Length: 197
Image (cartoon, rainbow, N blue to C red):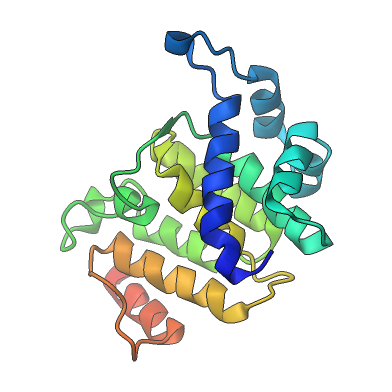
């Protein structure tokens, strides 16, 4: 798995999540037991022991240790999502309704900064679980999977990808449009810090 595969991974992860989610209207029981076990995982390594996570890894062609950990991280986070809201990116959903008033955000700027600072797999697991819960467990599943896959800097195949994801999330959180070509992650992070104060 490499950077260009993130979009394909996001679609496969969304399909995997849909298969696990119960859908009584269609008579589909889903797999509540697997979802419950994934929600209880204390760390990413715990999620790796779930057969459903291994099935997702095979589906996505993950073979290396870091790729498997990334897939397990995504699976453990997606287990907390109750419904898919593809209408907007996750960062925009949890960001301020009014960009001039940070108090209108589901995820307050200080907590959002903690998400941005999350580096390791287990730290990302905790940060994104909280984010999903703050959103009411209703998020854009594809956007979340794509972002979480590239988020940890630990064992990253492309460090610039982790920074680009964070920059995009800052812009979406503040509803500031698309990042410009000349904006670096450091500049964007500094401007996000300035907004907090």
